[in-house]
Picture (cartoon, rainbow, N blue to C red):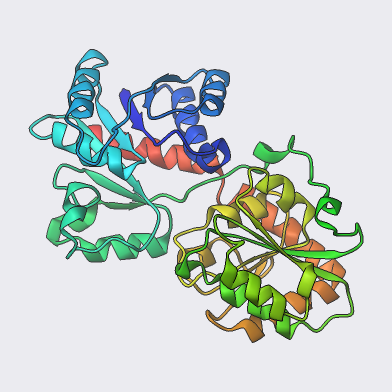
Length: 360
């Protein structure tokens, strides 16, 4: 079985690791994998380590005829049986090439932003040339099925996006004294780019409702999280200088290893990469009832609170801050849940089963 695996490639490795490990695992199962994308030097080093074949081929614009031509040549030269897209822009160009061929195609989808009334979606996730849409949670699966019609609903397939806690074993914890945080202080963290859907303002607002005698710091990580709006909220918070707006960071996992609690206050979330990473490094989770992310945890590994409710978010944070054994056990259970329920090995098996089913 020859599979062309199409990804972006130019994002930090940690943000693409689950997909790369999936490709590597499929190769170990006997699938002949060829990866294409706009690979950074960091990505190339990792691909070489995993002995994955790759080519730096990627679209330079929304509709790229040169890319489509190269894509067609690759399909023929490598006798591709199936194309697995993980990048929408590449799919927009590549799917047109698959028209009137026997080559099967699947695409990964991980949010609830797909809509049948959006014409552009019929060039990617709702394309008639797709054979399957891989949904990373039950929530996303239900959403995608609702956008499809008739027999096309069967194109939706639920395959959880698996992780492995061992991926992060060799990453040393961050020394948070760099941010003015003492070793005995308690640290609460949220990771998410500044977008309304992330509900970040409710995380910052929860600092007004903490009930603890402990010395607490909030860390906020992500693009534009050091914006003026959040700076104003920081200045108005009782935590004041104990709120750290760190902006974009390349050492997120190292920081997660050093915090005490991970919080996600999204208004909508497909599954949640940062949540999965925090669970992998043994952190208890507090999250809003924002969709697919709630499937990641159970009552022993996290707490679910209502969306847009900073008071209850603050109450949940306080509960974990004030009960050390409960908090630490919850973190251990979070890591176990990744390894026992959402492990990458299951993702590999489920994806391989999908490939075989389509090619039969």
